[in-house]
Image 1 (tube, rainbow, N blue to C red):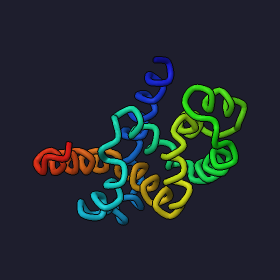
Image 2: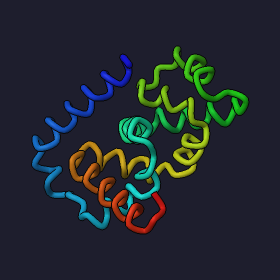
Image 3: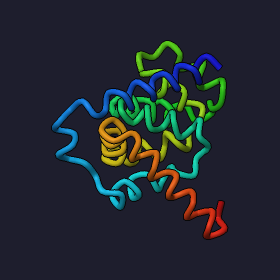
Length: 144
């Protein structure tokens, strides 16, 4: 529960800081671009989605965690999270150790990780709107 509160506070801080940079407004992604970026993770449960988005803002940590996960295939869940507790990675990345398949996907797509992380930092509300659009599409298609 403590991590969830930390996660919520972190997301709120990101949303409050996003409008500050004029350079961010210049590189604003379209809804179609955001939908393409969010599609691989939009249907994840909210708690996991939040961790993925925050972790993506630390692409080097994600790459290291993916390598660690690949080297420790027998660990997942709480055991994996405890095993990486001493790593210097951001807590959002550490929490993903519990989900080896997610780390594997992220580790195989470093450019996507960088792109979704940048989008989340620059346009957090738009990224979340994209997730909601994609979820509605999935629901309407009967796949949710």
